[in-house]
Image 1 (cartoon, rainbow, N blue to C red):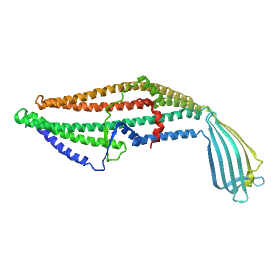
Image 2 (cartoon, rainbow, N blue to C red; image 1 turned 120 degrees about the vertical axis):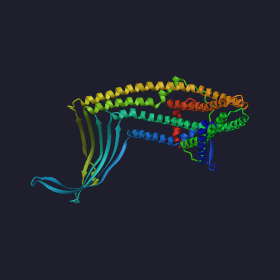
Image 3 (cartoon, helix red, strand yellow; image 1 turned 180 degrees about the horizontal axis):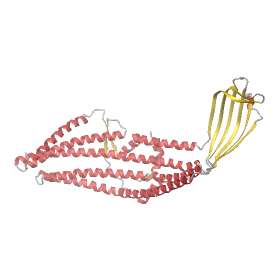
Length: 507
């Protein structure tokens, strides 16, 4: 035996025995609890949308943003609140003044209770707050149990208004709906991202199944060729080197078969885990041999992306927030003024019933507070300039990001429109490689070609089959990427936003 073949053959035999043991560990005999389910790519994607962990996570992320938006809207509605202090005990020494004794110190003990019911309404137009309050206070001198006082405010109407020019409600009204709209579209994008992941797992299993079939065919072919080679070696038409090549090919085919089985087991486990299925479920992937006859118009796709993509809304939000920062810095760095006006009626009485009996006393309050910076060493100017600089940076960044977004989209559209042709070419190449291998194998049987050409034909067949599956995978990945960017269903010619409510109703 030629020494150059000895080490590879011994190594292949060792690995083959080890792989056979691993095969027994990874692939026990089928039991009755194994459930086999045939699924197409669309069915796998739908199942991933319904029950995968990723779907659960993105749905709850969207719902969190939904309730945040509900809180924003609730902040613009009247709020009714009850504030109460049922017990407030106070025992202390206080300073008193008497005309005869002068100033002296006296100890007192009081028990007070109070409650107030108020309605508060924010005023988005001005940024102020309008409120109506009704309150009651009971005060008892514990040194003299007969000394009980009631103070009532049947109604008090007030209004507070900042005068510094910054109105947070105005900016919230522009930014919050934009954020919520962006959250809806990001949720739809996440679903398309799940579709891309499902496509990857689906075709990873298909590739593993193809690899196993190739490995099985290669093993059977290598076994047949080796047996033929042994017969020809005996009659002298095949040299020892060629026979050793055939034997080494058989051992390598056994090793490849073992690895292919393990690869398929792993691919199936990853797919079932991604879909949230039990371990005993085995999915049999139905390869989508046909693809839609679809060409995407670049200008239409660009327009759809501008209308639907959340990244465009994010650009708008960044610009609005930059303008908001300037407005807020100007208001906080300059004159700060607030006005508070309050009008109502009140009454004090020794009896609870009298506390709400007429006549009432008028209650009026007007308060104006001012804060004027006199010397700040350029602090206000610096803050304003910094905010303006940040806005200019944001504008430039957004402008460049918008250009990059449109360019990347156009390139993605061009690549997608080429995928159909790639699938067609790879399918034809797969068919030709299959025919070419069969012809070469038959010619080898009649001793018209050598082992080298036969192995070359087999390698070409394997590569062509894998390339075909890879082209299918890339086509569907590209398709769902186009849906993800534009949020548009090009096959059914409708926006994905139409199905949002239905998707959210799914468990």
